Length: 244
Image (cartoon, rainbow, N blue to C red; front, side, top):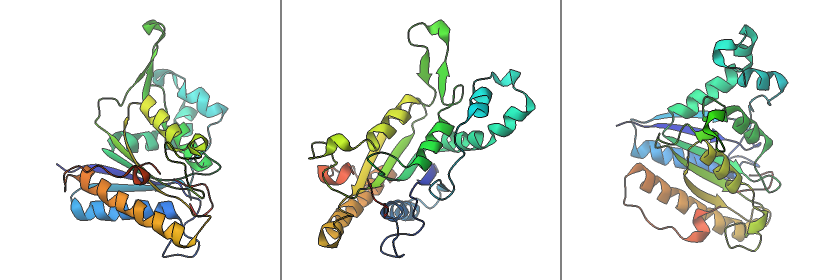
């Protein structure tokens, strides 16, 4: 049965490292994933949105007013305010697999991707709220949809993986896991390249490991090969530099 893959790029850099001057490592990893996925499953639909180059509008007071007004009570202007958010939510709801090129900027996600998050975390669309439920009035609305997510990152330094020397500074993948877990997407996989600021062989070696991790994830998630246990250093990575 064909699947829907939603490919999201969040890097501020438009090019691809190794191909374009000053290109993005996360775009390189996400493009590799999608190309290999397309080769393995040519019947699947692939949608691409580039929030790095075309970020969604930031949430403002009008957006909040519209989103927290019951649909039956909304005024005509509210539909216009929520149109972009509705489109992004519809894409997410339709997706079976979400693949994100997610750089680390200053230890967390880019502002462009945070704007995307703020547009898709929607009461009545991706999470529910009912005061009658008592102490826990919230619930995830995508929990039973079987969605999976892949985070492909890049980092300037090294040691951000769990157990690493500066893992405590990594608020990138963990924050995304928290947000998407809140709306019901908990099957999350990761791979990343580190050492961008070091360059040379350190970066090249890290890139080789990250690309190998990407290939394993495609094999595993597409069903083309049996699941394989990836080395810890290759399965939990992202970026904090401008080449992310």
